[in-house]
Length: 380
Length: 138
Ligand SMILES: [Zn+2]
Image (cartoon, rainbow over all chains, first blue to last red; front, side, top):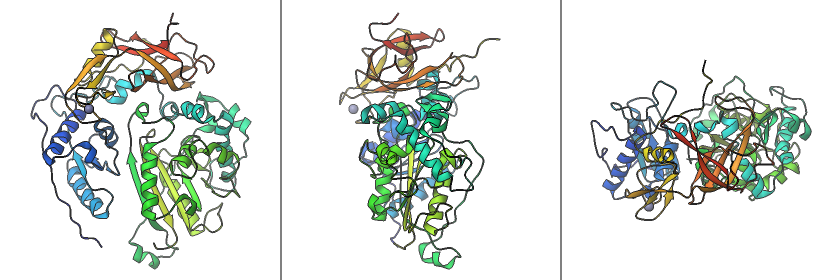
């Protein structure tokens, strides 16, 4: 065990205090952040971990231009910042990050940018996205895809094939919500939601849940099931606004999260026997395969088309049927981990032979955040 | 009963210049005085170097179509299928918008087509920047 050693090296309040009618709560976070960093002789470029409550860390990352290796948006009320300090100390001791910025900002008196009661609001998404008529994830998460398709010459048929292959996996799983085989034409002929996305390219909407119990690796042999070890993890956030992705053809949060998890586990994509990529929409496995390093940019659609991720293929992907065919309650990430655990234990309905390492990769928001877990059946 | 309308933004002090600009028929961006970085959405400091000395300026209003979807589901304030678009501004930043004076079809909406800003008067206070095909607007 490494000794826990963390220290506070910068500390400051907002420039003004009391009555600040000319700043939103979001900007109060930023003002305090810049002041505390200046107090430490640092800039946002030196920060690799962020924590805040009352505002999303995704907003903080975008506005301050930070690409974090560690994120804590723990929101439990007024004591949240004590918890952030605790998490940060642990994260630093664990080597997840080295310089953590924790922020608070709230327009509690002036209520600038607090949303109000009349339906009008002042958040970044309310000012710069919602007036243009997006209707939830099907019109936001999907927005980068045409650029991806044009850049790499990917067709609507190839996008449809993602759903077709995952339905094959679902057909092997009695618990999958939809199991009947589908064709590329079935997908393309299903009702248009937001061109180029048809209904069968969009996730299910279901009820359900899941849970995990973790213990120290040394104790893991004392329980009834074969242990599933956490070999590596990663996380990051990029932006609360899909319009502000660095590059519409790749997710920065995916890349950072995946890189950390693989490095921590000491593996490369070639070591992975089984893969789960959160598929709220059909394009996410394409971005995931490329951003995690399984395929070169632009090659994922062909990789899936050639059945590499299908039953019998060399990289079984989303073997429960995925969010497209298995289940999608809204926060599907738990189900991706559940399937990885089943595969590593050797208990999956569509069990892949000889799984020693499984990767579960999740997304948050509309390419806003990412988390990656590498699981294995051997103690590292 | 009034028809439901699209979301009307409420400016904050850090975005007021943007909405003031839109009402005056300008798409206003910010540029860092120290490093020259041009950025969006608005904030009173530079995301590239954290400098707090920044200037507001009127952008050219020229852009190209970066990506989009055509929404087929009902939405307050919109009729029929309509495109939700991302455009790359000539000055560098990308923003969400709608494309007007143009058929809302994959055939009419070609990626990388040249666009120019125009403004949709939502209320007396809020004029929303939208884009139309360059030179060809009605
Ligand atoms: Zn700058």
